[in-house]
Length: 196
Image 1 (cartoon, rainbow, N blue to C red):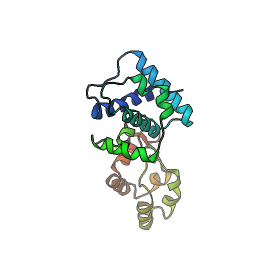
Image 2 (cartoon, rainbow, N blue to C red; image 1 turned 90 degrees about the vertical axis):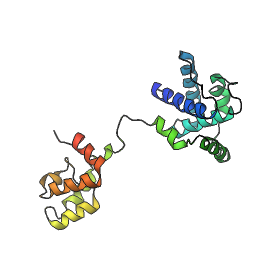
Image 3 (cartoon, helix red, strand yellow; image 1 turned 120 degrees about the horizontal axis):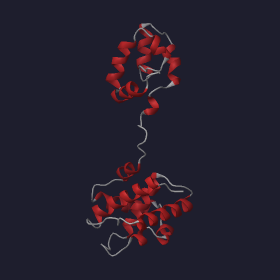
Image 4 (tube, rainbow, N blue to C red; image 1 turned 180 degrees about the horizontal axis):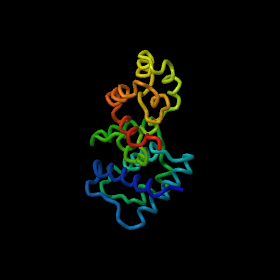
């Protein structure tokens, strides 16, 4: 089952490609038909390829737009996202080369298009708020200047959830070092990492 968010993001990726390279006035109509057509196309693509990934969706949007690049406005959403379009879709490296050159004309990259589909519900660095595997290293020579150096070289520094950090006499210095070396991780730790 394809979710609504993925359909919306797929339509955004396709619109970006078409507006920049084929038809600057392109937009999906506001009715439910385009959403239904894109949903069915993603379900067919999922069945054909054994699942959906961000890169596969982007590859499909690029491939579909590339197919109609010379037609201007003489194509429809039904053609771009229809069953035949999904059946003809392939991830051939030779074709990708020409598609990438075509995208480069508008300074668009596949990575940029994939970032549109990215799930933004969780920060990409959230997994570094607390790393239990660092506890062993932090425990080594705890409260000793050499232990402070080991901790700085081998870990991501101070964490409010770390038992070792809570009992270390170098916690303030380590907190400053962590803020200097990893400002975004430090910010996340301050916002989300406090024990209740």
